[in-house]
Structure formats: C-alpha cells, structure tokens
Length: 431
Ligand SMILES: Cc1cc2nc3c(=O)[nH]c(=O)nc-3n(C[C@H](O)[C@H](O)[C@H](O)COP(=O)(O)OP(=O)(O)OC[C@H]3O[C@@H](n4cnc5c(N)ncnc54)[C@H](O)[C@@H]3O)c2cc1C
Image 1 (cartoon, protein in one colour):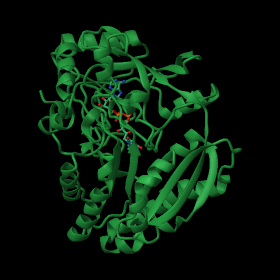
Image 2 (cartoon, helix red, strand yellow):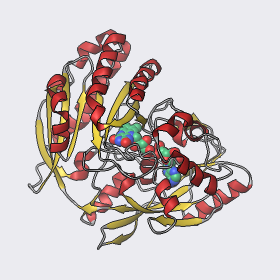
Image 3 (tube, protein in one colour):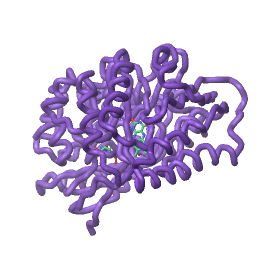
Image 4 (tube, protein in one colour):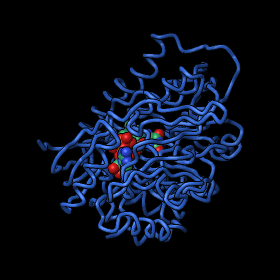
C-alpha cells in the first residue's frame, strides 16, 4: 500500500504508486521489468539523505536495504563487494572487522553505498577522491530487467557513467569498493580567525591528509579540523567528553541555539559568538569513527564544487554578500577539498576541487540566500552537489561537465523509455 515518502530534511515529499522491499537481485529485476512493461517509472530510495528531489517518485519506490552486507573480498587487491543497500555505518563496521577501511568518507555515515555514490558524495583531502571513484565495479539492473556486471573491463562505457548517475541508469544492486588497510587518524580541532586562515588555506589543505573548516557567519572565527594518519595508539575522547563535544555541543546545544535564532533572528549574530568557543582538542581513533559524526539538527544545504584555486575569492565574495544583504545565518559555512577524478558526472571530474557548503536551519527561509550563493558559485564554474539544493538545469549543467552528452548517450541506450526518470532527472538531464 502506497504512503507518503519524505526525505531526511523534510523538504521533499512524494506519493509513490507503490513501495517495495525486494529481498534479492532477481526480485529487483522482475519489479523493474514489470514496471517497464506497464509504462511505469521506478526509483530507489537509499537513506533519503538528499536535499534535492533525487529520490522522489510518484512511480514505484524501491527500498533495497535487504541487499546489504559483504558478498566477497579479494584479499590481494583489497576489493570488497557489498550489497548496494548497505549503509556506510554498517560498511565501516564490516570493513573494520576485516582489518579494512574506506580511504575517505563524508561527515555522516547514514547513507547507503549506492545512494552516496549516485550523487557524488565526498569527504575532504587534497590527495583523495570522493566515494564514487573508490568503486571499481558494480552490478546494475537495467530498464529491460537485465542484470549486468560492469567495471573497467566489462561494459566500461556503462561503468564509468553508472558510478555517479543520480539513479538515472538503473538500480545498482552491488558495488565493489577499493578498500585500504584499516588506519587511525589523529584529529586536531582548533579555531582560527578567518582572516588568518585564508592566506594559508592551500598550505593547510595540502599539509594535512584531511583538512576542513567551518566558518561561523557574523563572527571572525573558523573552526578547523585537521585529521592525519597516525600509528599512535588509540586516544579517543573520554566517553562523557566525547558525547558532550560531538552529540551535546554539535547537536543538542547547537540545536537549542538554532531554535532561539529561528524565534528571534535578530539574536543570531550574538548567538553565533557562542559557537567557536568549543576550543581546541586532539584525539586519536579509528578513521571511520573520526570521519563521521551524528547529525541530529535538521537543516537545508547547498554545496558547490569549484576549482580549488578559486576558494579564497569565492569565500570573500560569499562573506561580503552575506554582510551586504544582511542575511542572518545560524549555521556555519563548511569548506572541504578533494583531488580530481575521472568519473564523468563527479563534481570533481577533471579538476582539483574546493567545496563550499551553506546551510539554513529547517523551517527558516532559504530561497533568497541559496539563489544569491548560487549566483556567486556560477561565476566560478561551480558544480552543484547532485544531492543538495540548487536551481541548475540540464542546459547549464551540460556546460559544466565536458562528458555530459556521453552520459546522455548511455542513458538513451540503456533507458530509452526513461523508466528511471523523475522530476529531478528531468530538471538535471532533460527529458
Ligand atoms: C546530514 C547530512 C550530511 C551529509 N553529509 C555529506 C557529506 O559529508 N558529503 C557529501 O558529499 N554529501 C553529504 N550529504 C549528502 C548525501 O551524502 C547524499 O545526498 C547521498 O546521496 C545520500 O545518500 P542516500 O543513501 O540517503 O541516498 P538517497 O538520497 O536516498 O538517494 C540519492 C540518489 O541515489 C539514487 N539511488 C539510491 N540508491 C540507489 C540504487 N541502489 N541504485 C540506483 N540509484 C540509487 C536515488 O534514486 C537518488 O537519485 C549529507 C546529507 C545530509 C542530510
């Protein structure tokens, strides 16, 4: 029986024709071929953590959380094949039990493997790519119900496009991930003034394995996170301090400040001064425990990938625009970096990238601010995150991605009747 579907942030809703939870790849194939026969559409929902309508559908909605867990491990190559509905949280635990890890991750781990790669999800590190480029093979159920294995050697033209496809090429049912031996990170967190940070931003990004910062609008402060590989023994934050730092300060206390700011926006600049005071701290833990944190406060997000070399002028323009327009923002602006990759629709395709993310607390007005941010990012040839708010269309995106039309060619070839279409694919890829 169909019900209403909502994404995590609650800004996307849909009434699917039906919701199914296939338990096998064969079941996925039979649902897809039946839908195609009836002229219906199909969309997989991962964990619903996209802010765009990427997963929304009024056709058949598939949840593939039953396709979870490790299928096989190639110990020599450190390649691990998993069900595509495995969440990153589960994947991290399963890999750790095998002495393995993902080379890089974003800042949450609620997403499914397929959902994360489909929108070009990334973390930070100038020598590291986003998640899609860590995938070396995948199995896809296409619109005809065919189950195809693809990699650099099997159906390579489909493989390269299916790694970031916003679900428009078929249902990804298995992914083979290039893992690395498990490693520990030393996390160093410290506030800098934005003016002292900007002149050394590229050195900091290159000196540290994973560098990012959160600039607090209405203040001079930016909280930096510098995570580096280490052989030092585990030295995690003590449980109570860790809970206070990660869960209480970054979620409950922060959420309370956001609520006050929503009721009395004029207080936001004063409330913001409370944020960078979380101060400096250092700790050592398993990589995946450092990369991801709980996120309990709901918000809307826009994130743009721009050429890394443009990060300073883009941030200066953003800061000036916020001041000029008088926007009152109770969320930090997050800045990250990744190395270029060769995945055609990856936001880092062919260029080393800086990512600038802006957030608006759930329930507060976002449109004028996001439009203004997008105007700035467009002047830097910014590519929007496929899973985060933006207003770009196929016509504009075609110019930003040199291989956009190659992607459309593959789509025409394997999904000519647009079984995997929804309003969002019509917006970003055209009919
Ligand atoms: C709190 C929060 C923090 C975030 N942090 C980061 C971050 O650090 N870095 C970053 O880059 N992004 C981040 N994101 C964005 C998030 O990683 C992406 O939106 C991701 O796509 C969500 O994964 P999901 O499993 O929820 O997929 P969904 O949002 O459910 O789906 C995303 C797309 O993938 C498609 N899809 C899902 N499964 C399949 C499948 N099996 N086969 C084919 N298509 C499929 C869907 O149809 C849809 O088009 C964050 C989002 C939130 C809400």
